[in-house]
Every structure is written in C-alpha cells, then in structure tokens.
Image (tube, rainbow, N blue to C red; front, side, top):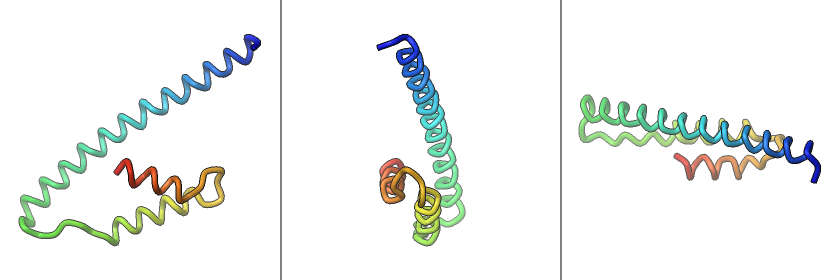
Length: 85
C-alpha cells in the first residue's frame, strides 16, 4: 500500500466517524424532543391513544422516496430508519 492510499482511507474513515458522531447527537436530540411531546400529550390528552399511523406512513413514504433512484435501496433505508426509531 502506498502513502496516498493509506492517507485517503484514513481521511474517509475520519469523515465517516464524524458523520456517525453527528448522527448520534441528532438521535439524542430527537429522543429529547420525543420525551417533550410525550409529556405534553400526557398532560393535555391523558388516556388518549397517541399513535398516529398516518404520520408514520408519511414519514416512511418520505424516506422511501428520498432514496428512490439512489445508490442505496429505498427498502434498506426504510428498514434502518425503522430500527433506529
């Protein structure tokens, strides 16, 4: 292996690590907002069913459509999203 390859690979891996850190931070931020939403719903609509299947369906469609025609399969992106969320 030459130095250019090694340095390029190291930089790309560092870029991936930086993105992973951003994803983790965003996920933690999302979880915090979810807790706030849950508390608000408990306070103002106790005992109600808070699942909104239409909202979830719209999110799934948005993810699928975003990856349609890309190098990454839309169904795989949706599967990853569902595992995370």
